Image 1 (cartoon, rainbow, N blue to C red):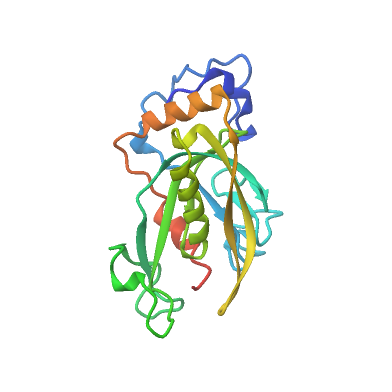
Image 2: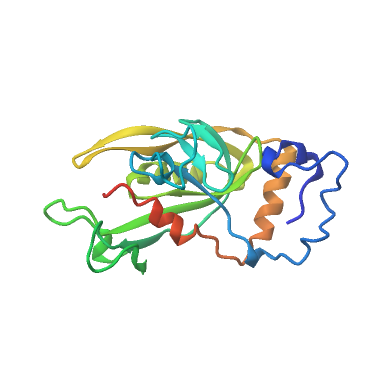
Length: 239
């Protein structure tokens, strides 16, 4: 996807170009296609997330429980709000994981659980679903233009419903306005955890709209999902 020249200086420092470089000059990287890349993920740090545990190789210095962060550039947005532009909503999906410390295996047990499968529903006795439903959106930071997958799992299903409602009620394309993504602590019977919250933002400027339009066009016909390894790592909330 070609960069919009006027947006180059607004990119994160790790991806910024010198002023004298033409962003359309792709020499040396001109054979990289969309199939060779995978978007990073906007994640929410929990008490057991590797990124907050001292001594863990994935630890991000300064990151605390409840902080929102990009797993690629390690951008720490703290509790937010993060002003995001939604480019496209992906189809919801469900995955079943092996229980923690299971002798049967670790990680993903079934990566393609049908949404109408009984494993996606609460039991009659109130037992939580076995499978986790993910609501995912291709988005980017409205200020820096850093792209990422915005992924809400079962504990943040309320944020996904709110975002879907805002997108449905408002006219125009998904990327006509921004949304404010924050984190909040929520108490469950099994214990507290942090969840995403979403509020409407404001209209985007023309340059941001054009950037989003170009990204939308570049993704046509492509399936975009967060890497499974990152989804597994996010399964540190056992409910």
